[in-house]
Image 1: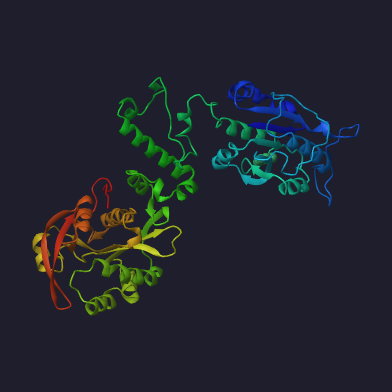
Image 2: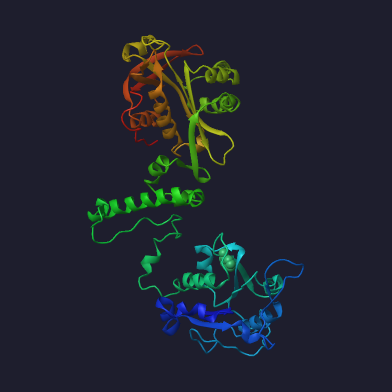
Length: 481
Ligand code: ADE
């Protein structure tokens, strides 16, 4: 690859002679030339700038000088025979760029500017496949806009920014771009494996923290797991730290992770951090207490999800009657208004306008109030006891982790509830005994199966499995659904 940098401060680019880049330029796959823009001026003062047309502060770099410089440098093509770091060619003006001068070669003109598109590792990887990269470093208020416009029609042009802050000129950005691109050229980085796991790599996550010896330094120890030599455990630990770091520092990166980038074992960490895997990839999920305004969104959610787990054999009419009686907007308004009797928790997924899941729990009004059904009363004898009456998640968020977040938050809310000043001793629930997925879920959520109960819906006798657990042990339950 050939890289030309045009600047009014060639010495600024001297660091490129050092280290890997210098070595690549001396012997490797890189031809690097630094050019002094003033070589293309024609006046005795070697003027490169003028005041802004239309007024305003500062100076703007002249298009005619840049035009002569870039015509020349671009025309020299990817395989100029005179490579060398720090050389200023100062060639005479002349070459015309028409995009056909070097057929088959890919040339890119990169212009650093705070108003450019943010430079990313993806762009850098793409630029590393070019044959010829020309970097035009502006100073002052920047380069006359017609320069980018003119060359944009003739050669692949990239106006890029290093970040949302303003530098005095493009040289630092050029240094950064050259280093980022050149280290990707074949043979430049000694151990190509070191490119694989770094931040902004294919995983889409920031890199995990790294350590070396001594294992104890200023009272800080290298994490134990890294010393054990257990490769799978180390890989999992690193992945967990990468997920945590990315969630804390770059939630935007986590948000753009696709389902295919989420691997086994990620979901637990994501859920703990308040994220889950929805149909559109990784999304932030939040569970909170229901508020009166939620009734209008809860009723359609409940009506849509209840039939999916309804007892088998329940006919359409009975189902509709149950929904109308128990899951209407008015009923939810009642549930939400009566905090002594009901606890409603709702699950939201960022970016999806609707509620994605909910729970409805029923509290006793006195310590001794038994479960409403006699067969449950017989097998759940601790008091006070509450019923987790509903826990539903839209099907597209099944396996997202939202159900376990809802369960954890519901149990936490129930742990805070007081009945005549007393905390709940137990939470029970009934679930269709033939729904194996549900039984597995409750078992993983720390519930214990107490037995069964019979009940009537729409004139039919149904049977449920009854599960119970204390509302909260010391830590929220580790769950998987
Ligand atoms: N020139 C001045 N500020 C810059 C930035 N943030 N990125 C690239 N070039 C610049």
